Structures are given as C-alpha cells and as structure tokens.
Length: 291
Image (cartoon, rainbow, N blue to C red; front, side, top):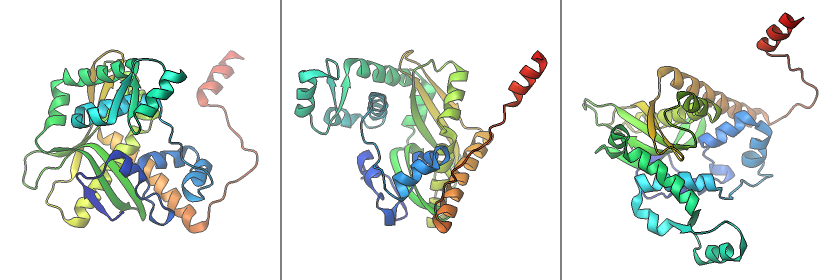
C-alpha cells in the first residue's frame, strides 16, 4: 500500500487484509503490542509466517464492532449485522450462519450490550460533540513510514482542522467496557493493561507524519480522546490524553519499532537458558519485616 491517508473507500476488512504480504507489510499497533508482549510469537506470525493469524470472531469483538458501526456508520447495520435469537450452538445456529454468509452475527444478549454502549454515548453531549463535529471523519486509514518501518493505523474518529483554524485537530477511539465508566480506576487499568496509550501515540504520530510528508494544509493532531462506553451500566465517559500518556505511548511504540528494525537487520534470535527473577521490592519489604 502506498503512503497516504484514505478518508473512505477502504472497509475495515480490506484494511486488515491490505499490506499483509511479506514484501509490502505495514505493521499495526496491535502487531507492535504483540512484539512487546511476545517477540517469538510475533516472529512466527509476521516475519517467518510459520503461524497464521487467528481470524475467529469472538463475541466481545462483535459487540465492539456493532457499537462502532451503529455510531459511526449506521447505514451498514442492516447489511453487515444480524441478530440471532438463540445460543451459538446446535442445528438452528448452524442453519442461521448458512443463511447469513458474510454477516456478523450477534445474539440478543450481545446486541443488548452493544446498544447499551451506543445509548451511553448518545446520552453524553460531549461524546456526541466529538463524533458529530463538522470536520470529523470516521474509519480513516493512514499508511506511512515511521523510524524506518512501514506502519498502518485506522482512526475511529479523525478531525483535521485547516491551517488558520482556531480549533485543534484531534483523534478519537471508541472503547467498550464491562465496568462502569464512572470508575476511574477501571479506565486507568484498561489504558495500561491493553496498551491503549501505544495505539494513540502511534496514530497521532502517523497522521502527523503524513501531514509533514505531503505538506497537507492541516494542523497537526494535538488532542486525543478515548470514549469509553459501558456494556452493563449504559453510561459513557470521555478520557482526554495527557502529555504523560503521549510520552509513555510514544516510548512503547518506539521501542517496538526499534526492536523490529534491529532484528530485521541483524537476524531474529531468541536466547534459551535460565533467567533470574528477583522479588519485587514490596515483597522484600513485607517479608523482611516479618522476620
């Protein structure tokens, strides 16, 4: 895929399928997270191609997908989704799948949880303002080189303001969650455990690199918002990225890209042998005091 920003014309399925050949691979944030988490697994999936990526649809992904589509591309709901009034097993389930090829199937419970997220966002004027801004575009794909590595990102929401505008360009990401969006600890945990900061920093730097390379007449993205919506509590909360969030996320993706570049240059090797894991300081303090 050529370097560029694509406002439309690329579906989510096409985006994930694009640039997956070894000679023209653009790495996504989820792949870079895998590299930090498990370099050997990353190597087998995306370098040596010894393993195939998992394509099985999980119901929690289906819920999130429906949530995104209902808010950002509602015209696709009737063509891309269908609700099954039963459980994912048995002859009726098999027959229903055969009758709806290519469609994402949700159970009634899945659909209820997805709609709870949608309704939560619709109840938040601030969330709606971000989504419905006149400059906001949805499912925007960007392909650029960063630190010598080709990367790809796909924005849920991207609002690029023209030079001279008094407003700041921003990006945004819709996130569904089980807990309440009024619980700050739950959202902070999600940002950390799921490496959402890495993704946001990569997205910001990717689109800003595209603006720099092409000299596009837009203000660089300086603001990022995570829109959390609860599947259980029917509420939503916007979390604005702080400078420290951006710093951490940038350090994470930069480490992944640097590791990738070095291994591609010098060859992928994995050490085999014993390692030592010293106890955490809190454990040392706890048990030294207990003696």
